[in-house]
Every structure is written in C-alpha cells, then in structure tokens.
Length: 278
Image (tube, rainbow, N blue to C red):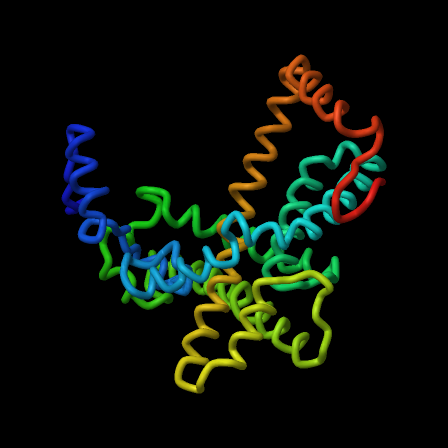
C-alpha cells in the first residue's frame, strides 16, 4: 500500500539500530484514525519525542514499583468486594474480574469511591479501548493507507467511517475530561478519597506551578490519568482471565497454588497488612 518496509535480518542489526541508536529509530507509526478519534492525548499514540518523554516520565512517577504500593489498600478492598460477590454469584466470575480491575484502576487514577460512578467510567473506557484496537487492525480502515480520505466529508458516499469516528471522538472526550474535572471539584470541595490517587496528587502539584506551566501540567495530568486505565485495564483483565482458564484446565496446578497459599494463611480467610482478616 505504498509503505516501505525495512527487514532487520539479524539480532546484531536489531541491537545496533533499535537499542544503541534508540533515540534515532524509536518511534511508532502515526495513524490518521488517531486524529479522527481525537486520541492524540494518549502518549501510546504519540510519536517519540519531548512530549512523549514528558508523559512517560509522569506516568512512571505514579506507577513504578515503589509508587504502586500506595494503591495496595485499594486493591485489597476491591479484592474483598470481588470475593464477596463471587461467593453469591459464582457464574459471574469473568464480569467480576473485569469490574475488579477496572474499579481498582479507576480509584487509583481518580480517587472515586462511588461504585456507580466508577462503573459508568469503566464502560466508557472499555468501549474506547475496543475502538482503538479495532482502528489499528491492518486493512480495517482504508483511511490509514490513503490518508487524503480523512478530508472527505461525512455525507460523501462511502465515508461512513467519518460518522463512526465522530462517535468515538465523543467517547474520547468523556474518558478524558469529565473524570479529571470531577476529581478537581472533589479536591476543591474537600472530598478527597481516604486513599491516594494520581489525579489528586497531580492537582496538588498544579497549585504549586506558575500560570505558564500550570496549563501544560494539567494537560499532561489529564492525559496520564486517562491512559492509566486505557493501558492497564485490557492487559490486566486479559491476563487474569487467561489465568482463570489455565487454573480451571489444570486442577493439579490449582491444587499446588492453593496448598502454597494455605501454608501462610488460615483456610477460608484472606489476610492482609491493610485490612486485617476477613
């Protein structure tokens, strides 16, 4: 489709170009659909450069191995809720896993403790993740190959993709702006969650910045908080779902894992440093 390909035929060439000269060659393709969906705020879709490094640095600041420990109380509470629901509705285990990780990530990102509010945001983000994945499927949308098609008006025959991406752009807006604005109102009204969150930490930093850098930092904060869910929910839920299938398919492995857990915990109980014994 007019796109050039460079095939690296040895490990040494891969290391020489993509490792030793990563500054020159580390990048990702820019898809026209990203602009149509208005998701350029996601550093997963950004070209490698100063803006990407700024987003990546802030993202890592709140989600590195040490920082994640601050969110352990949230994980523990949501695990408890998940197990209680699973006990009464064991057939909804996969839906429960999805809500478990979605809620935990939303609480860590924005500090929202309201279950209904988190559920609404989770569904919006899930739909957006699905559309982003679909838009990147090779050959799915011709506009990714014939870029002038993005300038075709939506009423033109065969340009139904424009109307579709307008709806996706609305999802993008709902995933990006309302949650962060709500978090700002919570801080202003003194309604912070009892647990730390990325948004509240960012907002506290905003007050320390000058007017020149405040707007830039707020844009970064808004994008980083949104990406926290988009980047984590799908991969984490997929991994957990795969684990459940594996454990169900190999009961002998499940028995070994249970035996290891029983060595350090009382049967029928889950203990934790943050929540005592249930």
